[in-house]
Image (tube, rainbow, N blue to C red; front, side, top):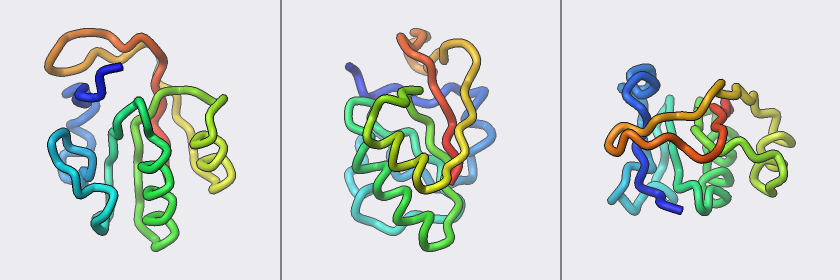
Length: 112
């Protein structure tokens, strides 16, 4: 799975002034403090550490929104659910900015 898909422009315009710790090519997103608010589109192949970090930042009172694969069968989904996250499913498949390719899976915005 390719992890370098950027958020679609139509969606990103809502989060343009948010901190984005998962920008491709940046490696400090898991070790630095996140801003408030934060928008995070983590690597889909391994979102668990990003979800764990988002929960930690949320526990500090920060507002975090994540774009994730819609997959309720995962450990990271369970953690988000237990934390009281809100799940906003995206109807249809996302089309990513750079490539014009559509995702092979449904996506969800998660609010912490």
